[in-house]
Length: 369
Ligand code: HSE
Image: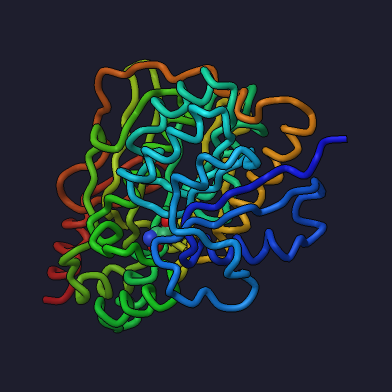
């Protein structure tokens, strides 16, 4: 019988803390494979981590964690791309499996890290990096493994969606952002949410997985919601359109087009119905047609649910002696990613951009006269 599988966790913030508590509680329905958390690497040992995390597991050296040969699986929840990249790389080099929620890391370096994981026979999993609890990568990799994905469009940033929803109701941008920060949705630097970079990282990850293309975040055009006019938002809303920050992509004979931008979505469209910090992704596959996933896109519990799903899968893979990212055979290089959205605010309708929203404004002002 396989001895208990050793786990090390890098980071113990909102996500890492929630995850560590659940792993240590050994909830039987979560995994069903014997495992032991050997260490949690944190920046400061002085900070109180609250109930459920024994101080004896905390260490202030990621190097010590990475050198601990009892550890088979490293869970990275520290965020960032510099130290996190170095640590993930070292773990993979050693043949350790890695589970991460780090969209910036995978968005910017996913293809390179996958190549390393494949060379070392290690699994690299990151369901939580896109859409929190939404099983979007698993849907692409498993359910649609035999069906080419043609396009997808999603609302992938809960903070922006919460801000836009609140502004529609007359609330202020700043209050809605403060609420998202209190709820643990916003990034440490919320400009990453507001200016669209967070969505762009997630878009890059989805393009990599949906189209098997080596897309990385710096190759994508993205815009955010900074400076959005609340009065205009409410006017559009009265006319049946809601503003959403969309991440969209398609793959056809001309290549790949992908972009993040705000657009108006009809209220009755599945993405138009998303409230607060919800996320949603509409996928269109050649044979399956259109599929829609919607749910909690951020926060400790939802994110740790997705991480735990990956951990469980990797643990089962270790027991079954299979590598759990073996569906990825490498990413095709791409020369160019075309943008999708026009420069002016547009209306998104079933995958096609129709009349720019400025026409709605023109219609509004002429009907007002
Ligand atoms: N800042 C992100 C959001 C967190 O608001 O959606 C989840 O990736």
